[in-house]
Image 1: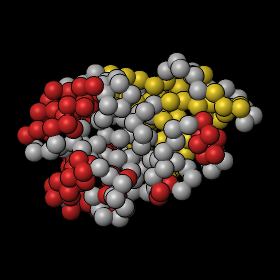
Image 2 (image 1 turned 90 degrees about the horizontal axis):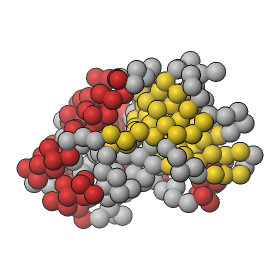
Image 3 (image 1 turned 45 degrees about the vertical axis):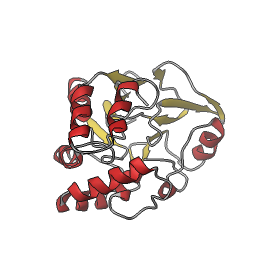
Image 4 (image 1 turned 90 degrees about the vertical axis):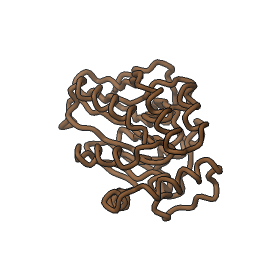
Length: 245
């Protein structure tokens, strides 16, 4: 039995302060016991320091993401497109020394109460591989022992249920927590959703009621867009927020 009653989990903020503030406010209203972040605090958006500061104030466990490592020059960015590379360079020039040290301190994985947290995949977390198919999910179930594994990275939320090595992916945003099941869950993206839904995404793990629920809420997209443009970042980074892609 978990020591928690309700847990909030989110990922891929990407320096979108307006979206992060909306999610943190929603989690406060949900009265969660603890919050966890699966990485990519920075990259793409206009508020890298402000987002780092908010998470540091919350003292919540945070996992390193590929963009967090990219701004520190400790991961390969050759596969980044030009817009992403330019955003990394811009972020690198804005980040405070204190927040550089904070990002450098983040672990690649974290475990707590039968929960496993990683940004990309349990198998070789440092390689930033995506989990996009059931075959990739099946492979990665073999690389964690906990009942729950939470990821981000693709910005596309899903809940995959493993029952005796048979996998299913329910379409409903709410799934029951059952005995003899394990769960691989992508919690979506706070700051740059890519599933054609522009609303920010996060997850509630409710142990009291045995429910896993993906939540979507609106935020001030226009303000986030205006800040991206004012910062001199690529206009497409602003425009894509309206479309959730």
